[in-house]
Amino acid sequence: MLFRLVIVLVVCLMAIALTATPAQAVCRFPKIELSVDRGVPGDTITVSGSDFDRDEYVDIYYDGTWLDHALPDSYTGNFEVTITIPESPAGRYKIRAESDSDREEATFNTKPGVVVSPTEGLAGTTVTVQGRGFAEYETGINVRYYLNGIYETVAGNIEADARGSWETSFQIPTVPQGEYNISAYGKRTALIKAVRPAIFEVGPVISVCEPSGSVGQSIPVSGSGFAADERDIRILLDGRAVPTVPPDIQADDTGCWEASFKVPGIPTGEYSITAEGRRTRKADVGDVSFQIKPAIALSPDQGHVGTNVTVAGQGFPTGKGVAIHYNSSQVATTTTGAGGSFEVSFPVPESRHNEQLVTAVVTEEPNGTAGLGSNATAIFVMESNHPETPELISPTDRQKVGLVFKVRPTFEWSEVTDDSGVYYSLQIATSANVTTTGEFVDPIVSVAGLVETSYTLEEKDALPNGTYYWTVQAADGAENESGWAEVGSFRAGRLPLWGLIAIIIAIVVLLVALVRALLIRRSIYCDRW
Image: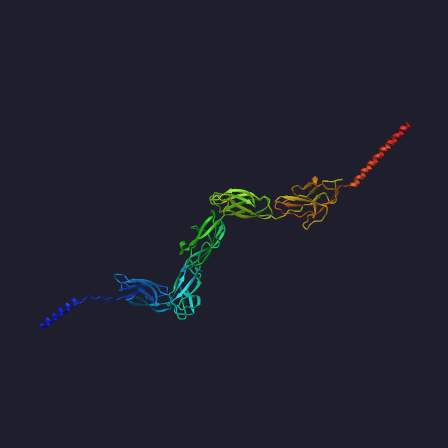
C-alpha cells in the first residue's frame, strides 16, 4: 500500500513540474529531394525542400556553384526551385540547399549525353550535335547515326573541353522517314549505351526542279523521306492527282523517288504541288509553289511567205483578248476560252529568212494592266532557199541600142519562181568590175524591187553614147537572194556625135549641090529658048 502511495506522489510531482516549466520550441527536420538524381548537363530538374526555416531564403548550389534561391512557404517551410544542370564532366555532384539556419545536400549523377539541333527535318539537313557530360578533355570522340540497324560513324576525332563538352555538325543521310538515334562515344566513354542519345526525326519532302512551267511541259519532281519501298505515291497539283511518268511511283529502300508530270491545260496562276502515298500523308509533306505560264504552239512552225499558221494558246487568263504579233507587227486577234485556251490563224508576212518571233499578248489582265505576266512566244522558221539566178535576154551581148544622143533601152530577163514571191534587182555600170558576190563595184544605175521581167530606163537614167554593162539578181519575200546573172554588155547609140554632124554636113552639101545643079540646068534650058 505504501508503495502505491509513493508512485502516486511521484506522478503528481512530475505533473506539477511539467505545468510549471515554459513551452519549448517544436523540433524541425529539414530535407531536400531531387525530381531525378541523374541526367545530362543541360537537363532541368526540380529541387524540393521541406521543413526549412520560413523566414530565410534558401540558396541552391551545384558542386559549390550557386544556381538559384527560393523562399520557403510561410506555413510549411517547403519550397521548390527548378535548376539547369551546368556543364560538367561525368561524375557524382552535390546539390546543396543552404540558408542561415539550415543546410541539406543530395547527390546528382551526371552522365554523358548528346543533343541535336534541329530535332527534325529532311534528309540532307545539316544538324549541330552537342556532347555534354563526357570526361574532362576526353579525346577520340566519334558521333554515330543509327542507320539500317547499326550505328554508322558520321563525325570523329572530337575532343571535349574541361567541362566534358564538345560540338560538331554533319548532314543527315538519305533515309526513309522516321526517328533516328544520334549518339557518341570516346576513349573514356566507351559504351554507347552509357550515353543518352538524341533523336532526329526525318520527314518527307518533295523537290520540283522548275518553279514554273507552261502547259504541256514535262516537270521533274523528286521525293525523299518517304517510307522505305512505299507504293502508290501520287503527285498532286492543287490537290488533284496528275498523270505521271512512271504511272506507278514507288520509293526505294531509302525513301526516295523520282517522277515527272505534264502541266495540264489550265489557266495561268500560282498552284501548289505536293505528294502522298500509302503511308505518307500530304499534310506531312507540305507543298511547293508552282507558277503555270501561258504557252503557244505554231502549226506549222516553219514555211514561206504566205504560209497559213495556226496559233494554239494554253494557260492564259480566261475570257481575255489576245493579240498575235509576228515580230513587231500585229497579225491577228482572238479571245481566250473558259480554260484559258485559244486558236487563231494568220498568213505569214514578208520577213527575213531564219527564225522569227511570234508573240501572244494578253490585251486585258484582271487588274486592268495590259500584258502583265501573260505573254507567250514561239519561233517560226522562215525558209532559207534562194531563188534561181535569172538569165539576161535583151539587150544581147554587145548589141547596139538607140541611134544617137541619150537612150532609154528596155531590159529583159528570164522569169524565176519562188514560194515566197520574187523581186528583181537591175544594175548598170560603165565597167565590168564586180565584187566577190557578183554585183558591180561602181554601178551607175541600181534599181531594186522590180516585179516584172522587163524594165525601161527612166528619163533621168538615160544613157549617153558609150559601152555599158548590166546584170540582174532575183530575191524572194524572205530576203533570200540568188546569184547575179552573168554580166552582159551593150552599146548605147549607133553613131558618135561627130559622125552625126558629118552626115548632116554631107547631106547639106549634097542638097546644096543638087539645088545648084538644078539651077544651072534650068538656066541652060532657058537660054536655048
